[in-house]
Length: 268
Length: 233
Ligand SMILES: Nc1nc2c(ncn2[C@@H]2O[C@H](COP(=O)(O)OP(=O)(O)OP(=O)(O)O)[C@@H](O)[C@H]2O)c(=O)[nH]1
Ligand SMILES: Nc1ncnc2c1ncn2[C@@H]1O[C@H](COP(=O)(O)OP(=O)(O)OP(=O)(O)O)[C@@H](O)[C@H]1O
Ligand SMILES: [Mg+2]
Ligand SMILES: [Mg+2]
Ligand SMILES: [Zn+2]
Image (tube, rainbow over all chains, first blue to last red; front, side):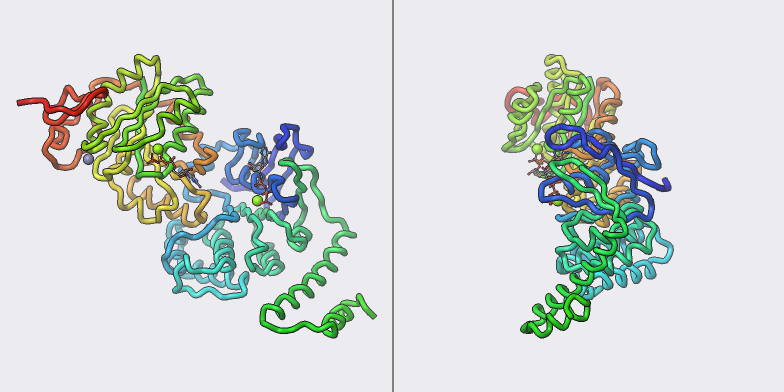
């Protein structure tokens, strides 16, 4: 099945009312975000996608692939190549195999022709996402939180090669966010981020706002917001710089802060 | 009458899966009965009665191997379910003895495995997996997509023809194909026979007499109601 687009038909929010957004379409190559306060149903929304919801989940949403209803029987069951990879808040590796061995097994299950090269590519990709490079001989269960997220993403993109990738709050895991988005943009896939992070939300093509279990609106960044996004990225870089300094055990000075803000043109 | 036998190691999610099965079958107008076979303790009967008010029963196998117990009592249990005006008997086994397998010819048998049990499990459990019609993989909410895929491939490698269904059994997601298969299952026809060969032993089941029902056996036997006793010379 070649996927060009997926469409979610709105269902009901927690109070049983129809969702304000009647449908939302994700096309191949789209990067979208889901935003909203804690408990508003963001995770539930991406679970609906991963399950090929067909009015049979608590939200009553329906998923269409290429505008056609999905035969969940064919799409989900009995296939090794599930088209959706979900990297959730709880997802973990449980295998204690060395990273490289596991990737080779997964590569062979996915019937890749050149396994050593996809394994290399995956490790390289993961190392670009995380601050602490992975050691290929170390058992998967010994990876740090950030390394685990990085490898989950890299494996889903390259070895799993899933056309639809759902990521639930990866920002707290020490992933390099801007680099992640830049890297992911090179792959023709649908990426959907559940996020509380302004940078990820603003770098997305559009974002879905949720409240009380339902989609309330879809926001596409206009020129003005894109300009704001640029400035937010700069401010975020400043924060990131100071975070790194604190992490490496240094003391901050107001002189340094002023210098940074000046270089951005915020102070004269 | 249809017969569905659900096997699988302890605490893999058999009851969790069956609760979703019962809920959906009731919605479709079916009237299932439920039988749990366990060694010493089981609380499923109370769950099924409280949640769905369907005819339910527990059998403790005690000193009998629970899968052997299954062979003994299943004949009577089908009669019991018939008397309850059920059109379907769901049997949840204890799943302790990995050497035996409780599936019966002409009925549907599925095994419940947990994705968290490690990628090698499908290579270890033998007939409980290889003789099943379907494998239901639970707890997929807890493992990576990659490990799920490897787990599935390992199941297929041990049991080429088996159908695999993956579910988060807390929510019953993705189990519709199982419900569909149960709905399409054939009516059973007596006499019923065990699918596999039990391991070598000394009772008539152990030596390969596979017909269902204690009346077909000699040695240590038991009916559905009552204690085990010795039958024969
Ligand atoms: N996270 C998660 N937990 C599950 C899932 N399926 C079952 N559980 C939990 O696992 C535990 C055991 O589930 P049961 O359904 O009782 O397992 P069982 O196979 O019937 O157990 P026995 O009959 O005692 O052998 C319970 O605490 C369930 O809530 C699942 O898909 N995901
Ligand atoms: N449309 C809906 N109908 C009924 N229940 C819903 C709906 N959407 C969400 N819920 C329920 O609301 C609860 C919280 O939802 P969820 O976990 O998806 O929130 P979240 O936005 O991911 O929260 P967090 O930011 O804390 O991760 C869950 O128990 C979920 O089942
Ligand atoms: Mg969430
Ligand atoms: Mg149980
Ligand atoms: Zn036995």
